[in-house]
Picture 1 (cartoon, rainbow, N blue to C red):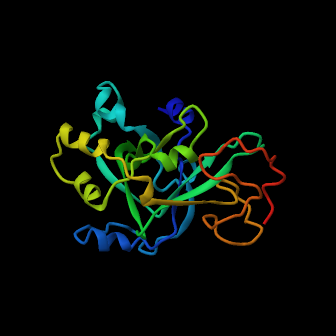
Picture 2 (picture 1 turned 120 degrees about the horizontal axis):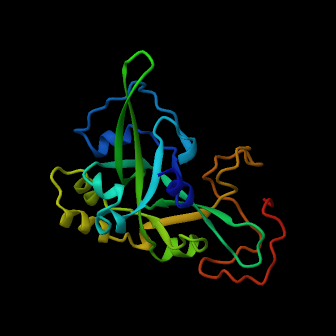
Picture 3 (picture 1 turned 45 degrees about the vertical axis):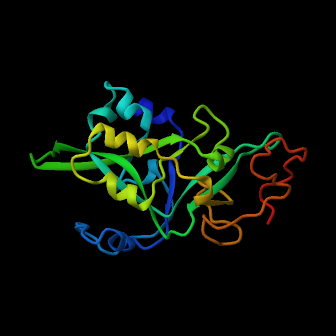
Length: 242
């Protein structure tokens, strides 16, 4: 599992800078089992640095049903939703020294819920006490036009998180879904027009932005070609110009 996680560098960066209480508005019957009610706000979360809810992998939907030997297939009924306000991805441009980071979010929604699979592991502590640890994996699929233009480089290019409609989000956590039901969800592709995006200063840099704004805010790059045009004749003078 660890080797697979380290190889699959895809969509490991998400954002939750909205109020988690919005989840209760979308799912009024949800049971709030949080120990700490005042949840922090994250404008960027990397799966490798989110210890309270660690992400174990980014799992392609093709393996959940298509590979009966995969771990994802075995836990396919352990379905969950991951509340996010947006995700991050890098875009490669020919002739530029560094990739350009982007923030992507759903239009007309304050929060979205990405489908995932979870696992709960029980271990025994040094005093013999029982301990439980939980982790989850986000599901991905082939990208729509917008995401293909952003996630355009690397071994796993042209992939994106499995974005759903509110109706399909609710359907995903319904009881007693069959494999045919799961396939209906996996086959859905959110239209590019339902997403919005803009470039940002950085994704995983721990230093504050020069302008002091949150990580997900717009950052202007000189000579940035439009999406779909990655063969810019202009060299990247500096990615740090405001």
